[in-house]
Image (cartoon, rainbow, N blue to C red):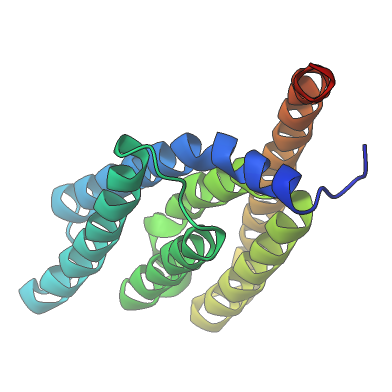
Length: 188
């Protein structure tokens, strides 16, 4: 089996991860709303913007969920755009809430996990690297005491990378588990 499937095999891998992507996005949306409403740290206008951003993610996830219910595969480009939108919205929420001091960085974890179990490791690497770069820039630019914040930022970056790595490892395990089933289907 090649390290990076192409064509129908790649599509099959994404098909198996679609449920995970949609479920993880629902969890991320729910946690984002709970954190926003339970611990408001902004003015009413900022709170409206934050809730609106999270609800836009929910609307997009309704579309993805409807595709699954109708037994239609989610197009690869749609899944990629949805994952990028998740990371963008989380970054915007962090910016609006002060960057490093914001507790919303935890929303990166389910977003990275969802895409890492659905996409091949090369795609996961690109998303994880971009997420780490964006978070590092945000955190470094907004930390009040850079000397005290540096170990925390490094720890968070390692955790983001670890989540992506664990998701990619799970993706490989699942792909290898499904491989005997594909081989037997082809020989029948």
